[in-house]
Image 1: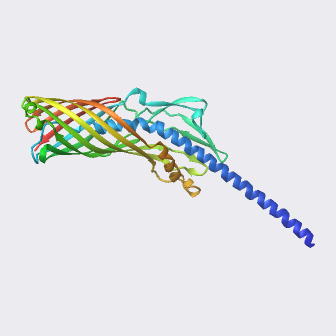
Image 2: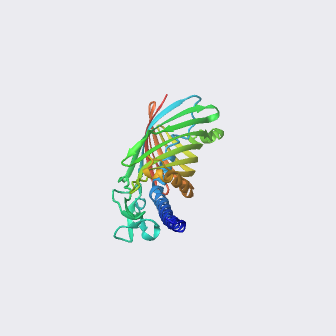
Image 3: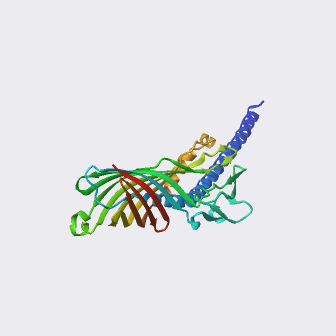
Length: 339
């Protein structure tokens, strides 16, 4: 073959290979953009889906900290078994979505729909998207399908010097359908009425409490199957740090004690996808990208909660019931033993 013909042939092969590589690069870039849109949709949906559950968790953790504002004697110890009941409001069991909310997904056969939050029922909505030319179907996650959330926990208190009391609470990990919940924390209570003997002589007791608790919530989340395999968004975790200041006052009537209190707390919410990584990780670190993006919906919230309680003595045992109220309603029943 003459040299000029060989050169022309090489040029044609080079142009052909460049066109192939260019097409692959464009396809890859388009796929990455589609995945970026999917991540944005996941961020939007995460915020709407999990927020009612995390808000409710703060109320559950806030209740029942102070058994009594009465001063405990030095080194006196008590242990209580608590049953907490959170009433799920109807307005927080579902939320509305529209096609305009999404950049990757569309609602199948509709433009708007209502889908359950983590506190909602077992309904779902089917979302449809396209990734690298392949259709992606997603069924939105279900809720716990309960009108009340009930969980048990243990709480202990130890009398310290100067009318101070160390309080600790711990709940085992509780599973409700596709949601797991756990809370634990420490608090310090200080009796205030000890400084006013005229009040104490009338069997009136006042105290302040400062406490920290951590609420840990995990939910089964987005099971997204694609041509690249599962995307690894199956589990969503929320960690909530809550700082609480509380004031309570009580009046004794022989074996019965009635009390009322004001709770003020501040909570920081963090979110992370933490399930098994999907096959998509062979292409891009999707979980890492999503978790970095989830920082955009980290938030802090303040709550003001009222609490009323009644406590009845049965020897060394005390039976107590309390109700916390504000945005939500939460009740607590406990049996305590003072050693």
